[in-house]
Amino acid sequence: MKKVLLFVFLSFSFISFSQKSNFWEHVQFGGGFTVGFGNQTTIGISPSAIYNFDNGFALGTGLNYLYSEINDFSTSVYGASLISLYQTNFGVQFSGEFDYNFAKQKDQFGSINTNFPALHLGIAYNQGRFAVGVRYDVLYDKNKNIFASPISPVIRFYF
View (cartoon, rainbow, N blue to C red):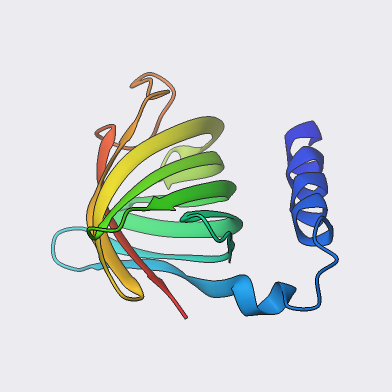
């Protein structure tokens, strides 16, 4: 609960730090999504908002939700994130994202609730409002994390 309150405080602090009249001209909304069907069904959405500084840096917050189902086993994951991006002049975008996730796993025997942090460091190719790349979770612990790997793809878009 303390971490959620800290996240909310940082979000409001981030929005209120600028008293400039053109604040909203630097804000972009967007995020990413995940869809997969077959032996495993996966559906996820992660809306976010970032503030673009004049020097290539962007800072923002986001929410995420992921649902995955394999046979009688299902997982629901939800969380919040702090996002930092740096855009180079040659189309490469570096990212750092701190996520805190809560997961509920269910099967025919019952359910298990877990929570875990993630610190993703990534690199992506950025073309306009769209970026695609890869990220690595440096806090990954296979005994506490529900994801199979610390490496994950990045597909990001902002308007």
